[in-house]
Image 1: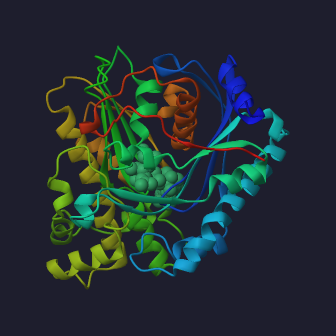
Image 2: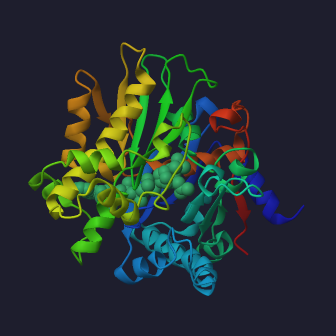
Length: 400
Ligand SMILES: Nc1ncnc2c1ncn2[C@@H]1O[C@H](COP(=O)(O)OP(=O)(O)OP(=O)(O)O)[C@@H](O)[C@H]1O
Ligand SMILES: CC(=O)N[C@H]1[C@@H]2OC[C@@H](O2)[C@@H](O)[C@@H]1O[C@H](C)C(=O)O
């Protein structure tokens, strides 16, 4: 047996493992790095979030990734160069975190790397008869493993698609394993660039659980700020949105996309919800002359309304449920206030109340997927129709 396989076997046989979960999402703000200690598997998974940092991307990094991010036409050389480069950059960022935490590579068993999504393309979106669902994450795992000296599991989404899913949301697996409860119905709401949620009924029924994208979380608001306010990346504390008034005609036009009429689960991305989408809605509704503040107020309301509608649809027959929010959108006060106002009596907490820093949640979920890849596989997920095929995800890169 190769020593690497023996090593992997030993890691899987340990009573607990240290896993670094990585997430770099659609907001392109930074790399979320979560050092977790994991024991058990399936519904017996126990997790301790030991360290969490977001390593901010500098302007140069953002510019390089944005040049290819969610664009139909790109410089293929740039994509090819970015694939190893992002792997190496993420490796450098992890090494920096380890130094800050006064740890070494030997203190970590594996890295679980999401990579950087540059294009997400479910069949329903591209509509080409000869092709199925597709998604592309770059930031090569071999480069990450070599740069850190740590075994790396990466590229989790391809197996999901190969087994019939859309490659997302993968949150459902970790949400179910970590956060389901037999004492309350839960909605795990993540408001990142794209908003998504996982439905966790208190019956714990793995066949009833599902996860779905909702529509834009922060992505359109961020894109608008970045276009009109150079040097700013988002509408900090909803200041601009709060200064504006919602335009009902524009809001109505924004809600017209066929994506919203589809049932759950479904996935989307900034390939659909972007500034071109806004421009078209403004044209259709004759609202080209709106002020920046009114547009931002409307975009904020658009994200809030679609989140509210998804939650109402899912919980229509329920007396009680609790929302556990996470992702950068929870720091947007206007967005959160609108959601709460539309759901009076519903308790909106954050994953902090479940012991997980809400900014770290997605990175933690990838650490859980890696743990399942190494020691799990016993929890039955077989509901491919709901986007939860029961497969092992993650490709192994050894460190030498
Ligand atoms: N103080 C704040 N006020 C308003 N918005 C904020 C604030 N802090 C963070 N945000 C929003 O959160 C975003 C970052 O969210 P997050 O890190 O969850 O995104 P992501 O992980 O890239 O997304 P995804 O889940 O889609 O992959 C910022 O771009 C911004 O829109
Ligand atoms: C293709 C892709 O990267 N999708 C992301 C994105 O960001 C939020 C939403 O869109 C979600 O579907 C997904 O990420 C989370 C971690 C998921 O798979 O659950």
